[in-house]
Image (cartoon, rainbow, N blue to C red; front, side, top):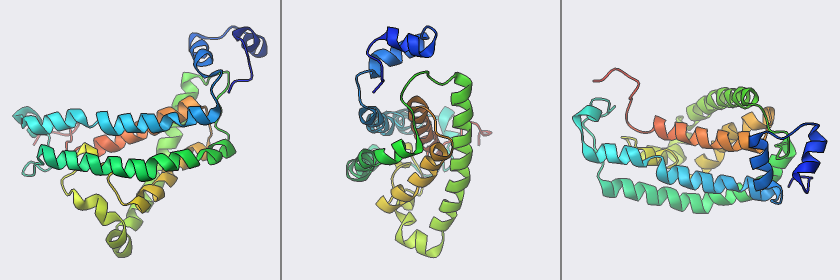
Length: 226
């Protein structure tokens, strides 16, 4: 919640007029608690898990030769019912694990110093922090993934994620509940090391999940066609 009752108070505090983005942020967040703003992540994750993979579902169902040449495993195809089952399983885990985890993890976000006030970060600051977050997450995720592919880690945890040998977008967050908790560490580590604004945090969570969905799409659109 912002410590200002009016835009005029915010202008006095900053010593300048608010930018358009800051005015929008003030009008939206001024009377909302920090906890309420943080919980927006639950809605964002639900929308991302539900909507972002849909174009990949359409591509898979079309079986178009134009797209098929980019398919990593061209001889493997999942039916709509199989993909929908994956989505339902992901949503069950979302309700049982991801959502509650978001609800109870707020104290850690306050502890590391995620801000909700004014001024808003510049575009350069946001991009710099997102770059750091991606680098930290990529490095730590790699080593955790290596651990999950050892005999014990795979047999007891990671094998669930590999039930879909031919990956699809919906399967990006499909995993054992313990793997979901473990892989939350790399995602949280960047903001913990270089804390920023809540808007940057929202963008980070959204972009990281979109990246995971693209990675698990089963298609390599940036590669040379087969």
